[in-house]
Image 1 (cartoon, helix red, strand yellow):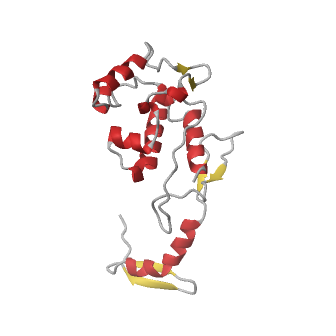
Image 2: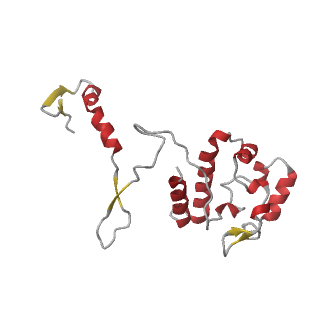
Image 3: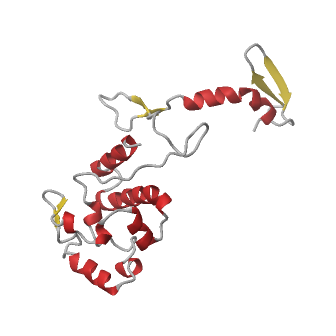
Length: 195
């Protein structure tokens, strides 16, 4: 393997030869502003499904705010429910999700929850043809996604509600409909457009 003895640092007017024994941080510092400018530019990413045999290049959404990277703002997502989903109405989600006994302290809540689970694991009040709850206005408190309920059931502070609720929805949608589902795509689009 070849290890160069010198690092050539390009600048606007000339190249500088720096012995490799010196720190590259000294070379990188003058270029820091260029890195910041480049970080603000939309990134190109290949489309995973080429059309007509040609690779299409698209850009990521530059207006999407994240919580990492240079010059970013810690902007929290706003949780919202989307139509035609109902992933949370699949009450028997399997061993990767907490059981009613792990969630509830009150035995009557466990009993009510278990009485709502149909033979196929879906809530008996979930209308599969319309993907809507037939008792939505009168649904139990634990079916409501609200900060106080998340704090009561899961110990999640109000200031962390949106992040945790969004994460919970993503995990549930992936488990029920899959990672490449239209439901997940719709949910992500709704959450990101709300910020």
